[in-house]
Amino acid sequence: MYIWLPLFFANIVLQLSMHKKIILLFTLAFNLNAFAQTNPGLFRYADVSANQIVFIYSNDVWTVPKTGGEAVKLSSPAGVESSPKFSPDGDMIAFTGNYDGNQDLYVMATKGSVPLRLTSHGSPERVVAWQPDGKKILFASARESGRTRFNQFYAISAEGGPAEKLTLPYGEFASYSPDGKKLALTFRTQAFRNWKRYRGGWKADIHTFDLTNNTSENITDLVTTEGNEFPMWHQDDIYFLSDRGPELRMNIWRYDMKNKRSEQVTTFTDYDIHFPSAGPDDIVFEAGGILYLYNFSSKTTKPVSISLVSDKASLKPRLEKVDKYIHHQAISQDGSRVLMEARGEIFSLPAEKGYVKNLTQTDTAAERYPAWSPDGKNIAFWSDRSGEYELWLQPYGQEQAKQLTHYGAGFRYNMFWSPDSKKIAFIDKAMKIQVYDLARDETIQVDQAQYFLHGALENFSCSWSPDGKYFTYSRDLKNRHHAVFIFDYGAKKLHQVPVVSMIQGNQFLILKENISTSEHFNRFRRITAILIILLFTTMQLSLPSLP
Picture (cartoon, rainbow, N blue to C red):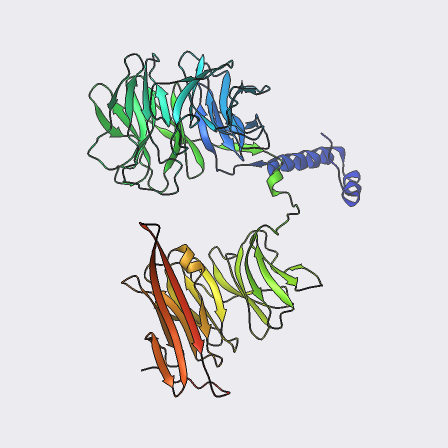
């Protein structure tokens, strides 16, 4: 092993004895190797053989001994790999890979080889299981389902050839019985959804299907509302995932085929178990980013310690074009420059000619919703540098920003400065309308919307009076209509304004009209038009509190 040393360090080495040189070089080599190894978690789609585990990390296929240790990368295409499965003898691995622009089935040797492509259909396919004799691979695909909303089962030879469609209307996950004559399967799944504790009509149930006479049986309790996923057939038992336990987490359960009863096997309380897979002696699964093994014989669960050696190419600094990722903008008071949010950074751009500058430059945080103060001195934005999105203030032209709030968990939206640059109004994900007072370092709770979803929160806006004493906005009511409100900041009073209100003399505020129209028979579209016109006959606004 050759190690490049800086010149000043080499001079120190030359002055040491041979014994100390060997110790120093050995120590340095050991430390470099230690730095190269990581135990990052985020292992997915694992499977287990008699002596190895295969899993996906960083969208590539890796293997590691069941006892843990250093993992070996087997593939590294530009696309994403998923769902690796060992052949029954453990010599081959079938997986879904994207080498040529589509998710197709591939098979390769466990010790590494050129992947053999098995499918070439335009629809994505997902490896489900090997047949017990190791001759064919079961996979799920929507190629003939008519709708990509559900999959169907197909089998294909491990050496390639045409795929054979199984006589099942739907199919997502399955496991063969030891003799290969039956399947334990789910017709639908919630495994790829972004919600948890689903109790609706699309929940999954475990069925057994006889491949010889085409009969099926639902083996999970039909009176329960919990889902049942990932059947794994081992001898006379079918293991599966369910969150029916008191933990309300996806844990492993066992269904006894003889007495037709289910019992809970694992009791994870913090995180759900994801994508379990059974081998000859164990079930491997991921929970909280860590791989675990459940042994059938000892009925014990233990974590698997895995070390990776990788170049961490995804962490290598690189240039990225961000013109396609612009989300929110703010124009300076004089119109000479504009702030733009892109890929979690705040940029300052010229209106015509000039420089472009990244104002935030935070690799490990995301900044959102920039807002330029009316006096042009400060830029406000939300940033999760502290771990949660908080309000930060950065003087324009300076590099350092200051955290102003400590709200904690939550997401906040666009900000609206008062004309005196002393207050900022905003709405958060709980639909709470608030004002942060910079001079007093306090947050005033103003109001709360009723039914705003992300789109309405994203489009929420308010308008301050020129003297900064009032601001107005529109929100929904409990009857689903909308109304305009005026908040008197000095008196801290909120007023709902009638449709037309005479404020003072010949100053009028024409506020709101809601229109619901019917289009094309039963297709309805709500049009909400908000028109705010202030007519002033005097040069200076004098707006009293509304009764």
